[in-house]
Length: 204
Image (tube, rainbow, N blue to C red; front, side, top):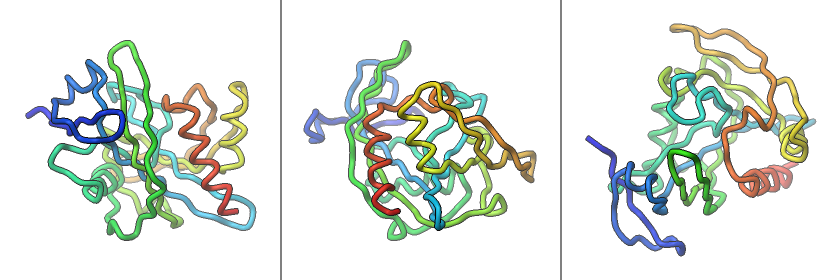
């Protein structure tokens, strides 16, 4: 059964519903749930990025939000936590999250027009590989990116940094290091990351 989304005008007022295909084909505004896991130490704040599965239709193998997804027409914001459990195997309560607000993001790709109201949440906590059960169709691995390094990546398209994390292997995991730069970052508008970095800079 095809997914049905609520669709909105540019003021984020609901105007109806549409299928996922129609929404992306003609660029209807819809809403998504984004959750960033992070932790802090004395030197920096670290964001958990997921590496998308190599088999994903869009942005295969690129680094993305810790957990995210579209909200169906029958769902409210609090239902977005299902994405965390489905993709990462971690069960939380909605009350554990901090809501940062929403940003309207518009991205045009060869195969779709993606106009989203991105509702952004955070969850503070330090996680180990054993805490995750990754959905292999969606997530290849989890990596930690210092916010100070993310700032440099967003400021300079040629800047690269080595990041640490793990890749899921069968029912276990393998520690891994990868190079992180703008070229392997899932395509989101620069203002999205500016908003995110400014929030985490305030936590230092």
